[in-house]
Length: 178
Image 1 (cartoon, rainbow, N blue to C red):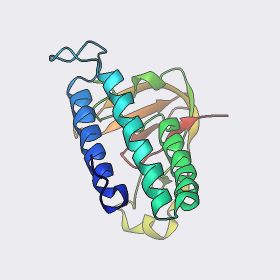
Image 2 (spheres, one colour):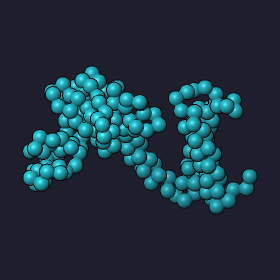
Image 3 (cartoon, one colour):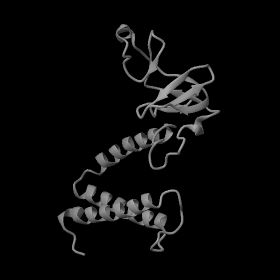
């Protein structure tokens, strides 16, 4: 193959091939069985990821941005690690569970993005009660999860050992308590 545009064209092609394999992996989620075409998707992922990585390294060198790329890569890697450590991350996503928070039962966790209000309600944003608006105070709850439940509105709640239940939303970060 003739190298054009300092390797950018080949890198784009390799990214497309990786996208195809990852899409097949998503369609085959939750199993390591061979794809319907008989191929090993994990092996294909490794191959295409390697091709993309080689292309990235080559193109970064062509544009003299290798150091900047590696610096950014380190920052983004930490972000991926943070996302992975969030016990509630993607609970409703493709790898989520029918009861997405049951894996927290019996675990000591810390939550974020919750608000306690003078009226006694716990919410992730401002309380509808006008008298509570100026008194909103952010806090993170910590304790052992004893149960989870889904209310009639489709909202998930964590029931803590200290007697309160708290709403969980997509913005609530849940981590293991230290």
